Length: 358
Image (cartoon, rainbow, N blue to C red):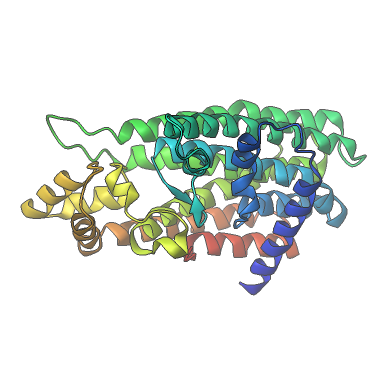
């Protein structure tokens, strides 16, 4: 796993250096620039850029791997735009160990009437700014002689067509599933939840691998077998990644994870963990779950009690087993790609996604 950590560090450095060169002076006023750049500058795992870079290297070699840096930064900015908007939707106050953008901007205008509303408004606009940056940086791949304009255009269409449509559908479905029926408590189905995970997380990882494959081969066709195989691999890993994210949202701590623990419970998120535990719970435990899940004013004591039920009644175990199954299926897709240092690192990335601690 040290090899993977080293590679992720290299990806972080490549992304940071390229983003530093981006002219940000045209992003005004200052609070909008802060909102658009804050999360990126805090760093991150850079898994999505790494998947794109490794996929390009696996099919195009070292020169191409290095040339896809604009696309790496693009997908990280695209991902960051979704996080900024997610934090508004989920009412999360922290992200990556610091204040969420809407809280950060609110506090910049502390003492002004309407500062809270302004913070949320600027966050929406900051997300839009990040989206625009992501498109611009991806187009910059066309400046390299290694990539045809046609290939770059098809990669852009993949991002701004299928990928974003699926992602927004997933976010909408996820938010809707958080609604609590007044007449009866409904945990939803694991099939619905896993489909939302595919849309919200798997699809963007799939894009990274397909984009890397297309750029690596310089082909304007996302249906070539190598792109499909790597896309399938990354999508399955992405679902496992989200399952692990839900697990860490229960068992980790806020300092390690960099975001609130138990917020999924308060927000009423329909996770596989909740569904399995509720199915196996006794009547008393079900009542506590019903009273706590989706209750944004629930006490920490109630949150902790529900977390214990999730552990006791097999919710966490079910999510862990599913994540392992998805990774096994993903590995069968990766084996169709010629073995190299890049596929070895992709295999390590798959293991990290299902076994990570943060």
